[in-house]
Image (cartoon, rainbow, N blue to C red):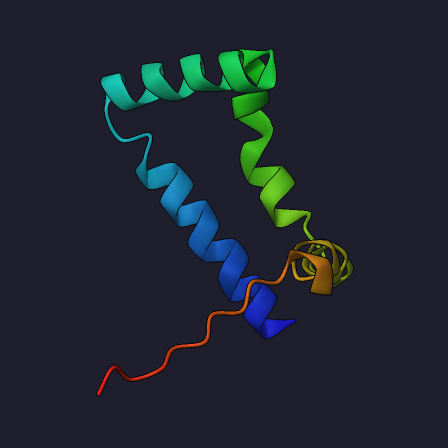
Length: 79
C-alpha cells in the first residue's frame, strides 16, 4: 500500500507537471478529446489515478504478464 501510494503520487505529479503552460494544457485537452472522446475527462484524471487499488494493479499485471504474452530471448556469446 505504501508503494502504491508512492506510485499514485508519481503519476499525479507527472500528469500535473505536464499541464504547466497554456500550450501543454491545450495539447492535453486535445489529446483527451481524441483518445477519450471528451476533453472533460481530463478534469477527472487525478481522481481516477488516486482511485487505483492494489487489486486493480494485480488484475492488470496478471493480464499483461501472462505466460502467453512472454517473450524469451536466449543470448549466447559469439566467441
